[in-house]
Length: 77
Image (tube, rainbow, N blue to C red; front, side):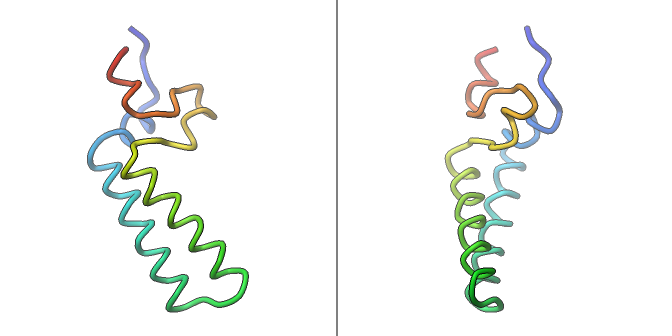
């Protein structure tokens, strides 16, 4: 059985997913209520990606650590 990176294991946990979604919601709110122009668009897109990653259980950083993109793949090892 392969040992996984602790960061990836945390991000695939319910707490990690909840934190990603919460940060995403905060970024989207900040984008539409505190930013303007290009910064608003960038913050909104990053926030939406974080919300989706929490809901769908994927981690964009995992491939950089040579780990599976989908969190559900960690349970199969």
